[in-house]
Length: 179
Image (cartoon, rainbow, N blue to C red; front, side, top):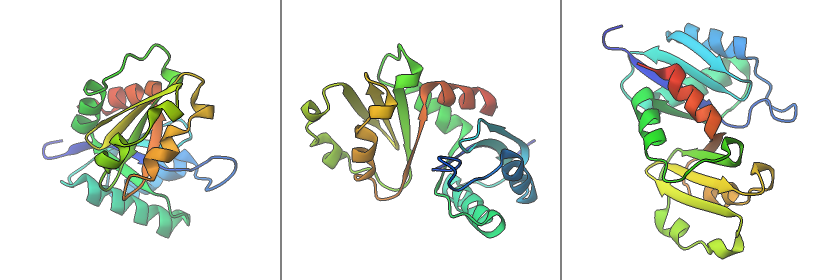
């Protein structure tokens, strides 16, 4: 697979509460129809790993988003990272993760307003922690992600979109992306 890059696509807000339903078999088929190879999905929340000759993850994200809109009828914000970028995001995590279900990585598209995020009064969120590293924001939620407030706050400081994954999912996707 010379010249091929391994990608991870993270779809935002699908199969949640019966909204924007996309079967993973349909997503895999769509990605293959777009010319991607080695396609695999993980859980029903819109995670796909695949290979392609494209050089730009943003272009891949737009191609996938357009394909989903045109073929499956849903406009789904999509973040794409190369396998190397995902591994770097795992390595850059500044926190210990005693409970992966209470830890999120927010994958951001567009520019992250780091100044705005640095100005957030974290004392208003005493059971949550946050760190910005590149195009990812890492958040810890002592009371669990169901009660997490910081992801919504972060989203207001990104000029694109955010989509979050718990730490277990991030590690599994990194493993699936391999190289």
